[in-house]
Image 1: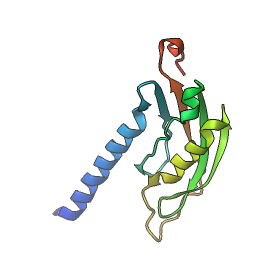
Image 2 (image 1 turned 90 degrees about the vertical axis):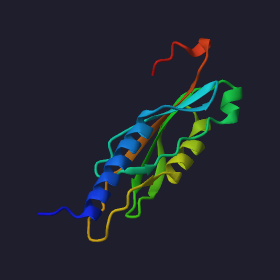
Image 3 (image 1 turned 180 degrees about the vertical axis):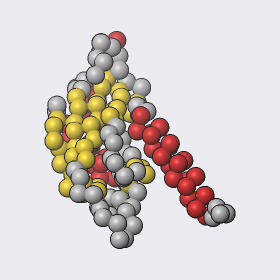
Length: 140
């Protein structure tokens, strides 16, 4: 049996996207030199994240030296767009809006017509931390 070159190319692209998504989800992303917004990844089953948006550390939180975490839960529609975005847990309200916007701007792989769309609620947790000697002991 001869392999279809198109199927091989699609398979290679899917593997590359999976590796890229895994790298992006596992890497802490820096908002600036003095702060970190870290996304704690979760398994989404068959839904592959195509674009993960990390929230910007709010300026007011930086000025007031506020740290915290926000857990945002949501579902994903057939087209790969999050909906029903809501804060499940939050250490401080100042981080909630930027966390919800980040989830709404993220995208997942679409589900082809004819396949059932999973009705699973997913959650993302973002940790907002300040990086300095004063907060060096924070290892969460």
